[in-house]
Length: 257
Image 1: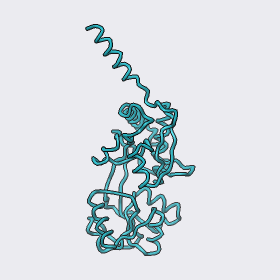
Image 2 (image 1 turned 135 degrees about the horizontal axis):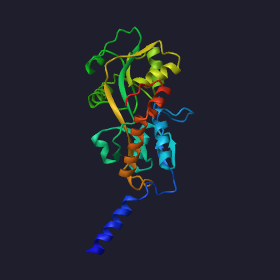
Image 3 (image 1 turned 90 degrees about the horizontal axis):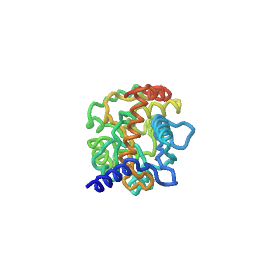
Image 4 (image 1 turned 90 degrees about the vertical axis):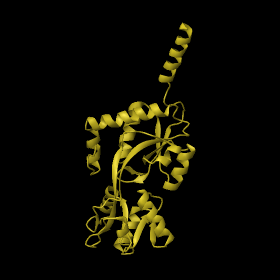
């Protein structure tokens, strides 16, 4: 009996002390082009990238950020070719993801229009009478995603690869409205010198919390649940000691903790 208990104790201790990262290869993190949270391949980092980079450094975990287009990134996460991406929580994604519990950031998706357009959106059906733009690969609420599919089927949807393209289409009056992350659209408009020409409407298609998510097929993280617990703890600590708010202020974001 004593021998049995001793073996259990040793096994339990071994499990507890199992390293989080066993591979010589660094953990691969998707570096989305999603300002002001991620900037892809640029010198600017973004809120999400700064916080995550700092946390992994503190944990002593080697890591590398790499940009991948939205559709390819999803397939690579499913196969474990990318270890980490930032996702809102959807039950269907649990088939290929482990989710963290502490939000890395919160984002609101709003209709973007030209200033003075007079467009009013208070519900999904209000988009019916307008020329609607859409960024390929993005999914918002279930209701809005179903609406996008309907507009695709009706061939009444103007699709583009980026916020920049949709903003140009707005300016050229090729579309009347498109939905985007409010903070991203306003920031990109500012970078394009057209911040005084567009506005985000108050109606939110979706308000989402975004979490650090780990591929279930990762080969570089040996203890996924413990790994995410430590990342969650780091994010929470940064919020509690106001370091998080200092980072949000760099990107003109509200400190929503």
